[in-house]
Image (cartoon, rainbow, N blue to C red; front, side):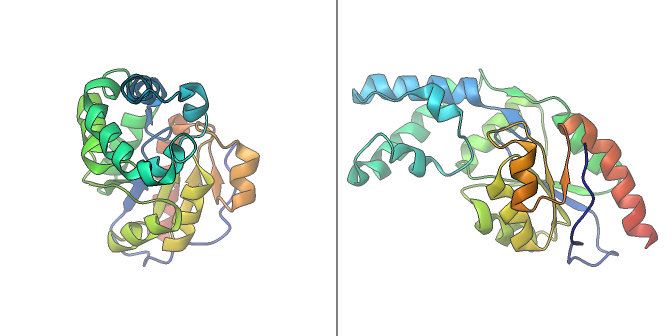
Length: 220
């Protein structure tokens, strides 16, 4: 169920509607693709990686995950290697989450702009979106937690939608409303405790919520 807003966005109420979305486990279920990419990485490096554990904690930057499996001095090179093999192994298995396309369309239907702000390497994020037919106005990659706030502020986003407590922190850093969905590693209670203003069951609830939000915003 949705919770009530705790703090208003700082963008002027007359500003055009702009909504930011996280990517992994918010718009797309990338777990099958990421698991496949890590299996290939393990085979090529000879280093065991438990891909089931990896996909259970998606959200933070790739380098943070790799640090669990590789020596620190090897992480940058391994990250480059992973990102290079990613397109051939991770794009096709990944799917859109329920309500993802409809949520982006709902922003457009209200005359707004939809942007994706993600920790994922930007070229690979764009490959996912193109493959699944999700067409945001902008995609900004390689940003995590509070750093996401920089892009959200730059684009004037009033709302940021994500599945992780890091996404909540990013929204709050931008002065945007944090809308959370427990479709990733963080449950609803954890998202609320982190400061999410609104918690929906999943993105299928987002279009109706957004219409009500925009009606209230423009009427105020």
